[in-house]
Length: 324
Image (spheres, rainbow, N blue to C red):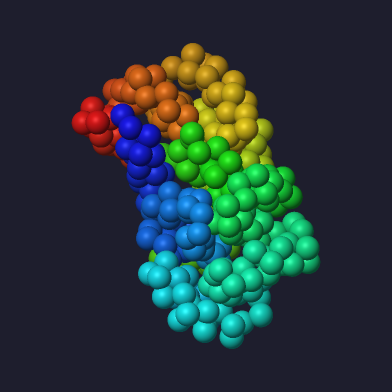
């Protein structure tokens, strides 16, 4: 399988996992850059070409967020002047980043460097500074900005995107923990901000609540907060296979993927009938490109039951793996 085919296979897997969680779906579409493949589109452009623009607005639904998403869509469509006219109406940090990038190539790098000096802990600024530096032919300086984004503001979607740019051999983004159960209908019917608030309240009610809230945080790029929720669930329920699996998945990073595997691998013999353990082992193996081993784990997950969310998803990806 080619690297491109592997990338899109895994991004699709992430999208399927997010589809089980309403807030998660918002997380993949909020940048207005094309739905579930938005993660894959956060790529370093060639020298001289306008850099990518990927604004992180979370689950915001206020008028400014709506306007900035529209400007982001215009930028992606190549209508940079139209995008710039929207960005200049606002004074927030995302708007300043958008305005600087939309002005490419006139003063973009300088403006972003000034923003980085004023906001040294903003992964949003540092991500785009790196993208602009790449477009300006300064690869080493770009990677330095991305490393700073990941180190200074790790609990953010731009940091996750910077990590993907620093480790292009891996699939984009981070592997999501996929719960075997759905969000309650009473939560799913609410607006995204209210969904998130309800899930946060529910996190105090037990293991399932913590897993759902952690999953929502993870899909919003708040990986540090998600890891904490998953770890809390694992502490509350030491004999719950799904809670232990979530805690292991939450440890994944591209700098040290072995940490997650060292926690997840021993769960297989401990919980031999757990579909969640096998599914997520397969998922993490897909993320690092170990396709043969991933297929084996996904087959084991599917064998438990193909009627569950995890089982049907495992079968879909086995089919895709077999066709490549």
